[in-house]
Length: 461
Image 1: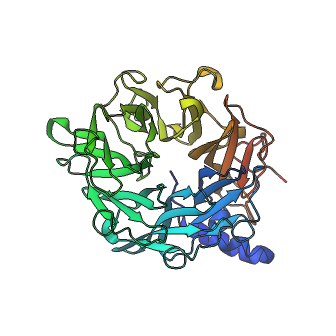
Image 2: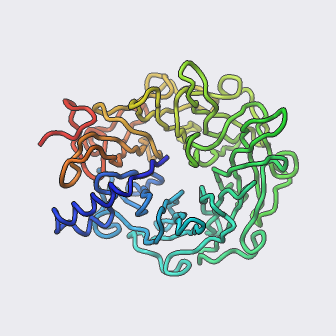
Image 3: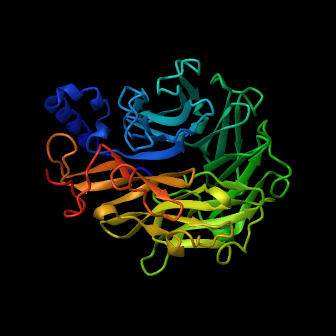
């Protein structure tokens, strides 16, 4: 869900920082935290602190205090923990919070035209590298993942880090021990390859969930051939040792949703994940997108459901699905009481993009207690535009992150044409903002004041 950032703009911002604010050089380690910042919220700690990951050139993990300010006890004293790596383009695909407060993240780096590297890093609760993991806190993944970046990771009850990614024409799953070494008891040397449909010519794996007994559930997209040509949602389930689960699907550990054509990725135009499959006692909910629909002929956000035996459920929502026209990047998270939280962004016309959030019940119907029962609601604080990047629930509130765009912003030194700012919004269960969080319910870094008189712009001094 992250947009690419101009290398030129990043370099210029870094130079301006160094020349204009010498004392702030430490914070300038992350040029993207100048005029272009995007970050995805992935976890809330028991103490209310929030964790995000971001960066497409200089990857980082950030931590916010419950008040919305960056946590000075994390990372380099500014709430930001860098992920040191070389490469022309580096990106974190997913991250997870461990029970002991450590953070694990999976990333990929392009070292040249034909050279890519995928790896897992683990940070201590203070954001410093955990040198007991892999080599100085970093464990390389085999090149079996190829050119497609690992999409998701999860931690099982044994403390293993499970990583899933795409490998033409199917998918790859890796298992790392708590030490960062490959789990030799998993598949072959810690790796398993598979597919949702053996007859498909192209598949992508974009979701991962660990079940209570350490079985591994993978969701993704499979391209059908012949009369069934089109994209279909696929599921596969593995036993803890990596072998197919014979109790899942048709007895071979896999299933295809024949009732609806759709994809699990969050964005139809980018190689993004639509989030993990949401597993409950009676079914599996998938959030993704469908093809172009309606007057505007733009892709639609999609929610659909399979039962516990991996059979597609035509009784969910309306004819088995909930569709949201012109909603991109839709991803979901499990809410309290069996509810489903979703976040994405609307894109109806050029230069009109704004986050959308919503809550639904277990049957796929809009939660009547959220936003007056209207399902998804748009959020355009003070006229800002942007796109949602993640969401989590904590206590009786939930938070979602977004990348918001400002025009003629002055994030640090001199005005630039435009900039992106990472934001986190705190909402009550009914969808209303908690105004004591950040500024009127929105926290950001770099910190900005939102000016209602000049939408899309930074407030005049």
